[in-house]
Length: 567
Image (cartoon, rainbow, N blue to C red; front, side, top):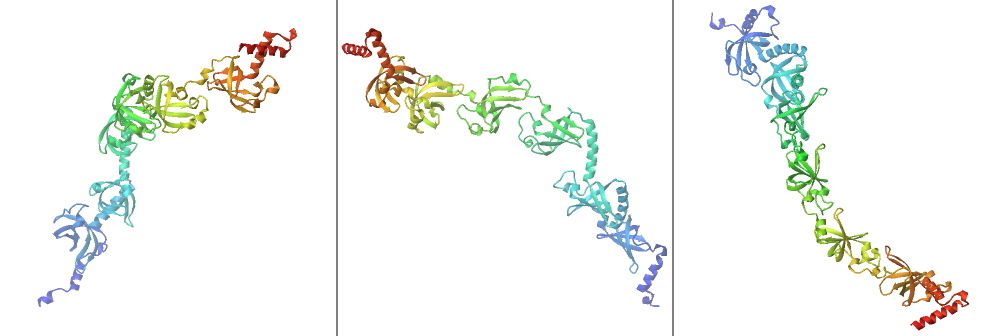
């Protein structure tokens, strides 16, 4: 018989192979079986699963996520049999499916028992990451990675760590896990344990985890506390980042614990001495100190006298002469300034400071240099409805009231003679250093014409010159004093028929009697009628009376004759 005749055909080989497979193992496919690694070739391991069947399994299926495969000849491994190709005698094997089948069984037990499972984050997908749970691939949503959003998850990848199964469906092959749930559970346990140990007033070490505009969150070892910006230091801190940095270890004091909300308030400044203790003794009123401008606002500037002690220089206490000016135009941040302590309130932790008090009061200096009655010169700075403001030495202003512009004319009329920028002379009338006011007068530069007639007494006779005639009377000038007076129509004559203003002409000289002098209103009352009545009475007394048989005409005639003789 030839050699060719001795070689079995393919169909004979298949029949022989089928004979070697027991009938009771017809369900062999689709099961996980144990096999032996008989060789390692290139990137595959050849696994003998018995029954004269071998299969090739990629080495990468034996490698944990992110690591190299560790397998050698003779190792016993579990593989999943997809199918057996009887014709070729090869089995289609999968280590991944074997691990997955085994993992699913364990995962279902863990899911039902609400237990944690270990896994490795090994890849990124849309919306999250893939996790290897000992062969089963699960989805980790991005929101379930950590308690707080994190930008870089690279440090968390390819390391074994615990996860919580949120949802799983074996039929669809879906598993959703959470790392955040594990962290929150651990955090809750740590929080409960730590909350039981912490007491208000305890000093503990913590790590700065996050910084905000209003403070910093400090990790106390599983529980976070808020360190408010006002509790960082006794001195002013505009932003926590000026003092703290993320990751820094700090010593803090537990200021307050809220058992209901489990919130912890922390403080750093409480561990240092309070600089406000004994503040009144350190900074007595009226004393002067040097400080640094730390902050400028619309209402003033804050000046640091020492670390943790600041005082406010109100805008009204910044300058003697610069009014309605923003504090930023007088001082600048970080500038060293000399200030005076005006008031100290330890209860409210407030110190009122003055900047202008450390310089000379310009009103006191002006009063010393220009006493009352001094004649000065200055520029008209402003014109208002009540007077002129004149710039003076020391950057101060003096005011000339309307009533002090002219002796004779009204203030409204006299102020028309002036315009802004004019240089004028004036007399210092009064300096009120408390109210920071200087009163000036222009009309006082010349003598007061009313002074020439203010000494006249009631009943005294004066000679006047008619200045103007109108229906109600006549306006006259008293002598050559420049003082004018008005004689009413009813006072022009004793007889009603002669009480006619037209009897007089401008320039006429007339005699009249002073009937009143009002120095306050600067008015003199005159009457021709009163003078005639007085003269008549005097004539009657001297030359006779109606009882003696002499008529009034005779008496007056005699008086006139006597007057002519006297002249």
